[in-house]
Every structure is written in structure tokens, then in C-alpha cells.
Image (spheres, rainbow, N blue to C red):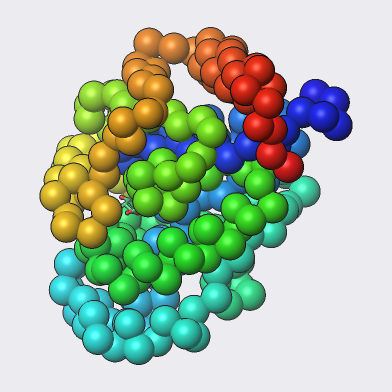
Length: 242
Ligand code: CDP
């Protein structure tokens, strides 16, 4: 893409374990854009809450203490030599810990707290200021960047998503069962869809993608088609930004 090609904001939303992150990361690399994993930010806050004793039992959070601690929580991302960026919580690399089951079991409860969402949405919008960004999550096309030029909504049945997540976690050496993962996915879907503060919703102008039967390569091709069509439309409309 040449210098006159506008740099856009791409929002990738969808259900837990739908493959959004892998897809969004690959797309960003291909376009030379920044990738932001908004779920990692909710996970980092959850890890902070666990480490500071703000979570007594699964789903039982000392909300007031966590909200009071928000100014102490700094989240950033750093590139690594493998090309995959890592999440930093107050300067510490927490990429591995935030994927563990204790975090997964509590993250949707934490992500349903309005004050936490407001703080993280602000940080996410700041990441988008320089445009040329792919961000994945649950509310990127609806709340974080309603003005995003391209919005993708990814979905696949819970069982497909559980099988994928099991393969991923087993490969990482974690001991979990298919049933545990399926339960966790269903539980998170439910919390994400029913919370009052920015529930998981498809933006009305999003393009749907059910990637159950797609290879990574087919998916990448499909995505590039959507990007190219969006860029063409912007050029035709003459309101290129960036
Ligand atoms: O990896 P997975 O798709 O399972 O989830 P994630 O993207 O790492 O996000 C973890 C959790 O954070 C989700 O289950 C949501 O409850 C929450 N989340 C959210 O509420 N809003 C976002 N923009 C991103 C994540």
C-alpha cells in the first residue's frame, strides 16, 4: 500500500475463543498497523485484582477496592522477538499469567464493572489516536470506536470454540478438560451478552464472519478483501483520513 492509502481503524468483535485475536494480530502485521488486544487489558486488571486479594472466590470481587486502585494500574504492550506482543501490567510482562484459568474464570465479572470499562475504554481510545490500528474485543465497533471504518463480527458455535481453546491450552502445557473449557466459554458468553454496560453486540454496520469451516489462509484472504473494499470506498468517497 502506498503513502496515499488512508490508515483506518479496524474493529474485530466477537465471542470468546472465536479466533479474533489470532486473526486481528495477523491482519495488523500484514497491514503494518498496531494491534491491540483489548481482552488482554481486562485480563491484566483481573490479574491485578487476584494478586491484591480483591477476589475472594470465583466471581466475588471487592469492587470498591478495585475501583479505588484503578489509578495504580498501568497497562501497555511491548513487541517481542517472536513478533507476538506481550502485555505489561505496571511494567511487568504478564502475558502468560493472564491466559491462566483463574484469570479466565473471573475476567467477565471484572469486565462487567462499569467503572473498569470506562477506564479501559479511555485507554483503548488513546491507542487509536494515531489510527492504523486493529483492535479486537467485545465492544470495539459499538463503544470504543463506533466510527471505525471496518467492523468485523466473528462467531462460531461454543463447541467449536471450546475445541480450539483446548488445543491451544494443551499445546501450552496447561492441564484442562474440554468440559471445563466449554463451561467457561458458555459462562463468559452469558455474562458478556447480559451485562448492562456495553454488552456484547454486533454493531449494525459490522460484517459477519463465521470461521468454523475456514482455514487461516481462507480467513486471511477474506479479511484482506474486506480491507481493500473499505479502502476503495474511502478513496471513492474522497474522505481519506490520516
Ligand atoms: O480470548 P477470549 O476471546 O476468550 O477472551 P479475551 O478477548 O481475552 O477477553 C477476556 C474477557 O474480557 C472476555 O470474556 C470479556 O468478558 C472481556 N472483554 C470485554 O468485556 N470487552 C472487551 N472489549 C474485551 C474483553
